[in-house]
Length: 92
Image 1 (tube, rainbow, N blue to C red):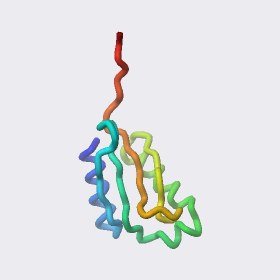
Image 2 (tube, one colour):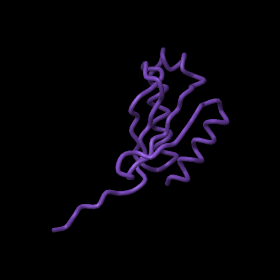
Image 3 (spheres, rainbow, N blue to C red):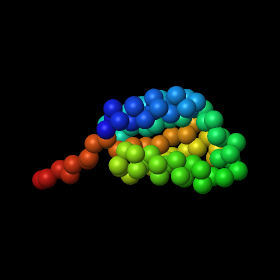
Image 4 (cartoon, rainbow, N blue to C red):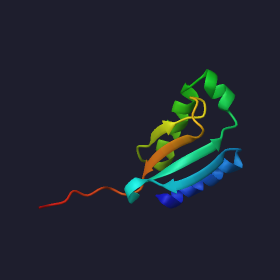
């Protein structure tokens, strides 16, 4: 999954997004960060743009993702958390 997220980040970068991928806490997730958004002014007026992008990420990666912040919402970066490993329960 991490390679797929890296590939998606590279494709987004080609489209003008400043992207990076970093590990999330515990190693179960990665965070896709977008430090520049070429459609930020549109998204500020129409926040459903960000919601549609989040749904598209989920469809492309075939996993539930969670948007934590957006540039359009006033954050310094758009951040999406993507699961890469399943947590296992400890059996006692």
